[in-house]
Image (cartoon, rainbow, N blue to C red):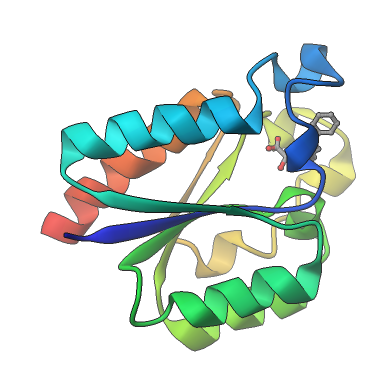
Length: 145
Ligand code: CA2
């Protein structure tokens, strides 16, 4: 079965516990459960990971090669800073869909820049946890095509 890695970056482990006005009340465990449910309906396998460490995220991206067909990536604040994550994605040549809970383009200017976007198939932002499910739909269609 086609496998998708859903990878979450720094501070996303705190989801649902703080700043509910910005990020909603859904916890990361809830997001995982929603993704697993959605994946089942699409006939996809999912692995779900989170790390607060840039190097650990890079290791997970490297390890995804040959194991997963694509990555759904919410790199958190590393989105706006990490050339290393961008290089890791480019080096594994895996399809990546960039996801953000919030609309990063409607927030502070420093969040408008994404180092992930140039190496991603596309970006989904502003739809909360629903964005992860949209990314799975998009990947299902993309991988079939
Ligand atoms: O909107 C998103 O998904 C972000 O990737 C979330 C990042 C932020 O730095 C990006 O600009 C946009 C922050 C994740 C922090 O998550 C928290 C969740 C609950 C409480 C505090 C932080």
